[in-house]
Image (cartoon, rainbow, N blue to C red; front, side, top):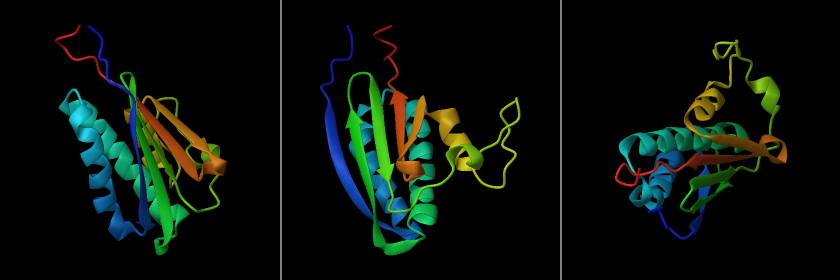
Length: 145
């Protein structure tokens, strides 16, 4: 029997300063948490969400509370999809992370991007890097397998 969750979604808006990001992360996680199939799935999403929000606040909003970070979450039977957009100009996505063949980051910035890519199945940047979409495929509950 497949997971038959119909698509649910929610929009969020947060002040663009780093002090607001813990509360922002918890609001998003409160919406998502009931739909996780296990702790590992939850931890992966939590850490990646934290990194994406921190980047949006520190780099995109320049830690300015008067700016707004937008976040949308969609959950369906196959994946969790989280999009975070900041008001900044974006960045050079390719230049932000240079890795060795073994995957080690060799730049002074971009460790959060590497971390998100290691935890999330799909990380897509849009609007010149001002928006990131995180897509985590949902784990199949062990009772279904």
